[in-house]
Image (cartoon, rainbow, N blue to C red; front, side, top):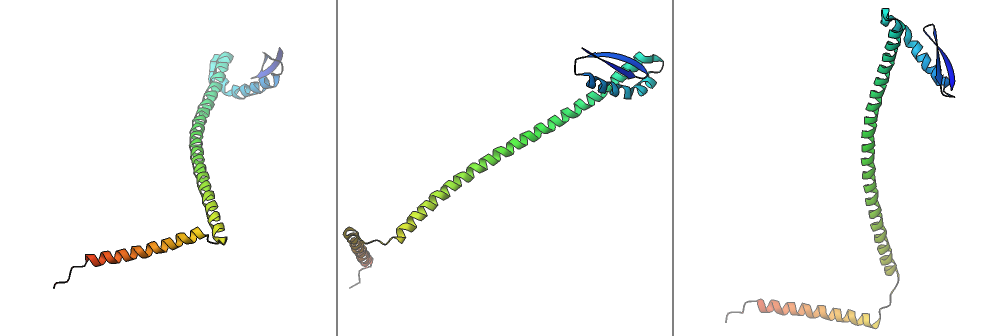
Length: 160
């Protein structure tokens, strides 16, 4: 256990503290010593015990104000944290949408490239492809002929 001597208002006070805590106790003693003159004046005839009590009350008031400020800051930081989390979720959703769109674009690009490669490659029609083409041409001609006949049948008969 370490001992520290403090001078507050001309009185020496010896205080026990843990080893290594001497500098902190001296710093706290200086804070009390700064408030001592005001507390002594406010104590009036109450003397040193009253001045010590007033000093403790002044310090307690400062601690209370600091705690209230910290609580306000904590509330603001929590609100900001919620906003940041919401923005993060929104950005994650947008990133997912962009990834999906990118995948679709990649698939469309691959299809386009395949089609372009097929068009760029000269092809020699096979006999079956030619037969299908001829069959298709024949079917188109037959369909046109049938349409013509259907129109003729729909015409009113001439009056004799």
